[in-house]
Image (cartoon, rainbow over all chains, first blue to last red):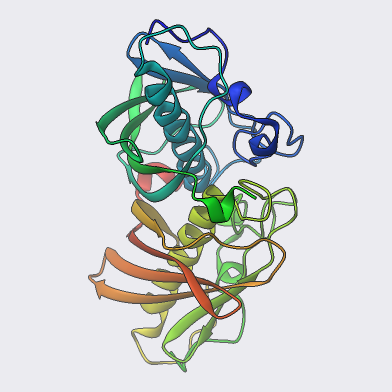
Length: 157
Length: 157
């Protein structure tokens, strides 16, 4: 995906789509996840806050699902932008989640930076299937798969 | 589940397990979901805040996954407590999520109270499979399934 800029995908969403609780640059109360293209993979880093716990010492599963979700949508957008092969500056297309499957392979320790990786597994013009992993200290603790679809007109305002 | 008290399941978790970002009574920064036994179903209500949006007008999918997740764990705990048939006051056993599958059937409108319902579909001593629906204004917008397992010793401190 060498034709994409080194800008977080979420920063390329149009202003109307920049309020997402998980990744919107204009949501000061949200997680503000930032996903970058790195070769054929899309990568993000996130350090959960102490209050993002499930039980003491471990990250809340709902936060991990949220990170996988937003990162998968960014990965889908990047894949669409990369398709032409020509240099693209944006805007990034907005995908929304039709389905999300999260497998919690191991407890995810709190207090360390997480790495989230995404890769498109299948794609059509309207739909992408994205595989995501979340790692803590180089150990994959979560594996997820998301079905991303282009935002329907009913949601696009 | 007539042998259970009319107390939110999450308020019956031991103090050590009351910090969850999604449903811990002792997490002031969290969502504090409260799940109640209603006959053979477990029910919760939650009104997302304006900042819990995905795109304007609609609830963030990661929050919906989080609500399904915590509610499913509470449903699993209730099912275990109900099993003896004898009056039980608590504590509620703590389950954690091994896998979560969320299908976003329709966009979920923001600004209305959501109803979350959970029912155990399959159960063994250590594991429960829980089906969850989330409805907005009586329309089911999300269907989820969670695999809940008794908290492993490695997470129980």
